[in-house]
Structures are given as structure tokens and as C-alpha cells.
Length: 423
Image 1 (tube, one colour):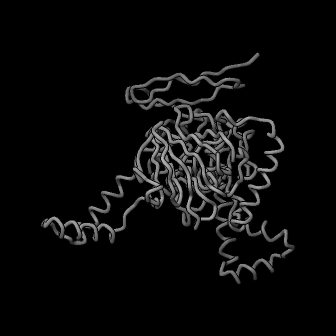
Image 2 (image 1 turned 180 degrees about the vertical axis):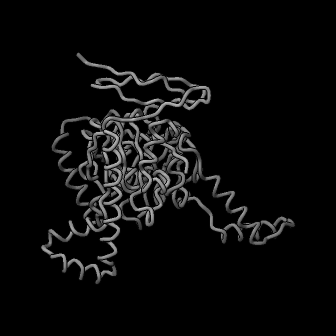
Image 3 (image 1 turned 90 degrees about the horizontal axis):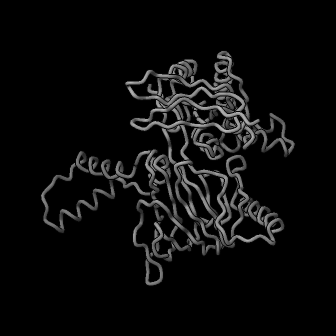
């Protein structure tokens, strides 16, 4: 008989929900009570998967081992490229030691741990774990999050190389070495849940291939990237020769940061049609289209849209001259205006809106761009491209050529449950 285990009643502000885990062989001790009127209760999983990044040292080893290079040959080759073998090895050892520290800390608390490399991370690992720890940087966290389809599966990021990696999506860097302290806070409920909204993707039409190409591990050149897509496309065509793509197909991946659509060759303009919130279709040519979440509004989207102080100063100077306005154009004023504008580009990870950004739109009598960026609940894109991709969080690429249609939206059930610990 299928067993069911019910998680504690969860208090989220004024909301209360009961979470039901189906097909679970054991209870999962999670409480979400954050109200001051409620006693704090902790979170202690029984099984944790620790997903580790591939370090640059490991990548270079794997890359050149197949060429038959010895360790000494590898040192010389890296030196010729201007890279330090000893430096890469040092960063690798720092990462490895921090991973071991995380694993020891968990096992001391009686938690069953399974350590997997990012290349081994799959749906089976997600099903096995009560919670998942991303041991790396933001890239590893994005990969880990992409395969967690249930909003009831907590994901925690730990930055394993805090001197060289920013780790915006990870715990504060002090907890890398003080990980036992982080566990104590989790166990006693001294934390809060942050529900990060994520993007879901539906694909339909022709010119699509639902088989992804993983860009993280392979670090492919443009030629290798295109070849990988051609191979998966031929395989897909053989498998789906008699299948219809008339109905939208939901991809088994969620985006925490952003979706980018554009030609693989960056010097080639991307041609597509776009519809925002079921509005009319608009033909566009640009350097590509970015659609981000509140989490991703601090990442690529921010850099696409931000203004430099030089641009702000030039615009203000023109405005002052044209309108005869009297305001100071000193450095402090320019910095204040620039910062206020750029800060307006960032919004909450819990916000249920998407932000779309058109990169360098081409506007003429044929192609238009009514808005270069804006908020939306749903964005539909029809590809008219020759050799384009839809890239999820910079790491997973789907073919997206002429005839492919993507519907990009959000759903409450796709939220990612993450932890916030204060410094």
C-alpha cells in the first residue's frame, strides 16, 4: 500500500498550507512556521544529495587525458596558455576540502549523504533526496535547481570557493567554513524560506528538438555546439518521425535565472515573432531575446539593461541644454541618478512576473519594437531563425529554428524552495 506522510502545518505570513508528500516511505521533518506567534520548528532531512561542480583543474585533466598527455605535459600546455597548473590545483583542493567538510558535518548529524558530480546528477538523484545541497557556485546552483520540479524539495547552495566566486544564490560565505553552524540554525528553525519563482517552457511546431545539449561540462565551441544539436536532431527525428508537435510539450526543466533565444552565431541578427500576454504578434530582428525571473534580474538581464554613468551624464547634459534646466551635473548627482535607474531593474525573486529584454533591436519599416523591455505574465516566441538556440540559465541549450514556438510562463507549482540564513 502506498504510504503518505504529511509535513507540518506551514505558516507563511498570514497564509497556512498543509503539504502532502505522496509515495514517501518516511516523514520529512519540515516546518515553515515563521510567525512570531508560533514556536520555531526546524528542518532536518534524512537523506541529502550533495551535487559538486567540476573544477577547472578536473576539466583540463579530463580534456587532455583523452589526448594522452601526462601530468607534466599538462603543466607545460597550461603554462603556454598563460594558466597556472599550481593555481588550478590549489583552487581544486580548496573546493574538495570544503565539500568534504560539508559531507562530514551532515554525517555527524546522522544524515545519509550521497555525493554526485554534476555530470551524474539526474532525476533519480532528485527523487532519492529529501533535500539537495549545491556545492560549487551559482552555475552549479542553477543546474541543481533546473531538475528539481517539486516546490517541496529544498535546495541549499554552498559556495565552495568563496575567494574566487561571488555565489549570489548560495549561503553567505562565512557558512562555507562554518557549515555546522548553518545546520544548527536549520535544525532549530533559525532561518526563513525564500520561494524563488521559476520559468516553465512549452514547445510546439517544427524546427524543435526537445533533447537538450548540456553546455556546462562540455564548454563547446560554436562548431561543436552546432554539431551536437545536429546529432540530437537526427536522433530525435528518427524517434518522432510520425509524432505530431501540434500540441505544446512541457519541457522537464525549470529556469531559475533566465531564458535566452537567439542565433548561435552572435554576429547574425535573430529573426523572430513575439507576443506578450496574448497580444498581437510583432516581427522583430535583434541580437536576441532575454526573459528573466526576479532572481535573474540581478544577473544577465541587469547587464543587458543597466546604464553607465557616462551615458547618464551625456543624456542629462543634453536635457539640461535643450530645456534650459538648472541642476548640478556633478559626480555625486550623476552617480545617484545612475544608481537609482539601475536599481529599478532589480525585482524580488518571489515576484510572479517575467521581465523580457530585447537586445539591440533593429527598427525599420519592416521590423518594429514597441517596447525594448517590459514585465509580462506570458511571452510567446515564434522562431524565424536559421541556426538558433533557446538556452536555459546559460547551461542547457535547445534547438530553436524556423517554425518552433515557445510559450514562456510561470506557475505557482514551479517555485523553488531555498533557505535564507543571515550573516
